[in-house]
Figure (cartoon, rainbow, N blue to C red):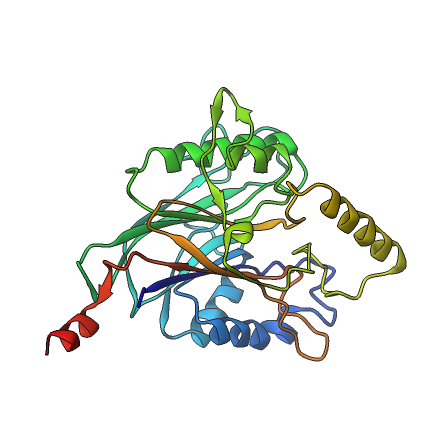
Length: 311
């Protein structure tokens, strides 16, 4: 039986309008922990979470450790982060880092290309524990791109792809987070190898259309603003129009702004869920989390399993 690697991407953002309303963090933080523990991902990538939110998740997820810094730099404790949580029993953190999506990627808080706020990508290389043969490694890249500038998103995608392209070709990579655009945008088309950016083409693949099993395919958008599938009349008409467009154009798979992309033959997408778990109509986030499961090569086995077979 093949082993699996599971990844969840989860936007935690809480703006000022939400801070005192029914969707403020204190009202939904327990639901966030409940959703995460129900799926128990090997890797949890959060976006736009601040330290107080991440500390609460850490308390509720004692089996995990976390890696990530503020978009204003390692010394800042108040601003948002792209944090990678990982199951300590399943994987070992080998190395990690953060670069800024700007013309000065090593400068904390730097902005470029018309972006309004600093944007970052956090990466971490892991090794599976307790498997045979030992040494199966993979890298996770977690990002949150600029919300307003298409040029910033395109250049950020190029910068991140250059990082991924510099890695050993046999190292599997999962690249996920909040991209603040659709996959048929110039950003998505570049990363998925369907258009050029500064003379180069990306080589990522999208888990959602490739997975053998998919859950909640009718939820064509991952951002819902805490409304779930209950939209106003205008939004409902827009959704009908877009759904008809999707039926007409088979290349347009969805309107997701939260993605899970990957590179590497040793990762095979098995399932992908748009997670719409809620409690009495209250949601853990204004974005639906995405949960993806990859099967690993059959040559990778648990040490206990192989030992048991020998005995």
